[in-house]
Length: 473
Image (cartoon, rainbow, N blue to C red; front, side, top):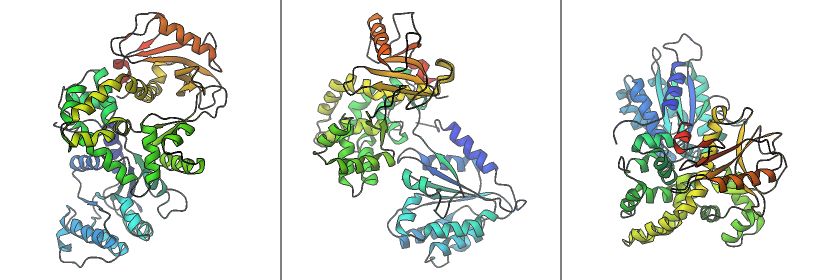
């Protein structure tokens, strides 16, 4: 695919932050720092590269590999000498610095004082792990030298928890940088990138999670089943290998957390059932694994949304691609390697309607939250779902003034995402019954429906895939 799709908001934010770096030394502290975080394969490095190409500023782009401090210091020196910073080539004959304190001091002497420049340290968590003194050295270099120069320092990392912690109280770099989170490409970006109708774009989003690497191998205009048939014939397809690489990077040593994640990926949602599916883990071990998974943003822990407190926590895999991979691709890799990707495809077809019906719910709730001011009653500030231990009732959409314990329920809704089945009178009757069972709702609480195939009724607002896609401008 040609061109750079999406990321308009992120590029605009990068431009705005770079614009805060004045030319020359008119300010005592012209330097700025930006901490960019996002999941692996989400396109963080590609976004920063695109920004650099458009900005046309002298820059250094260094990517740590995490082998050892000595190897990364040597690589840093080489990248500095080869960078587009003024007179960077003069560093070609210098000895490799032995500490990050020395390396960052060398960097400061290479930065221009009369015009803005950019320094990118990619995969920064590797540097923090391999050298406990790195954060302190960075803080000292920024305070004493870099912040006094017109430079934008961009620190990029995939370890979400660590990148968030870098800017917290008690850490050396506390309050020195602006934070920026890079999400996957949105369903609207997927529609534009693949030239697909809205309903098909949501299918593609559920399979790829909006990860650019997978979308780049998806031929423009190709439907879901044709793409899967092709991808499942190739063991090297990004659809197959990205999930394993992501898990290996997130859990290099913690096999138990990965087992718990797999149990959730296979559809278990409650504490008890997850523990049973993960090998009858004791509650303490399971609790620690779930805390790790939620801290790493791999798993979302959700509570029912109503005016009544509830302890019925449910868990789901946060990343749509990883949810799909854990359900179908991971268990089927051996079959693909034996040339039987057709069996994996058959399994996906068999379970697709049920799996998609559950997987699309958080995506639709996010879209409704984004559209709240335009498509939901006034005062809606939270969108969630409601359930009981017995799932009677289980309500797809609940709008409220806050979460998880609301003061006011503003809307109750249903999701109907089946092929060729519009929202009908039977669905409306069930929705009214469920509204009567929702704590905080009444007969006057507005109803709405979200349907893949529209509605046969005129009695309530119905949002279609085209409507939902507008949530991501």
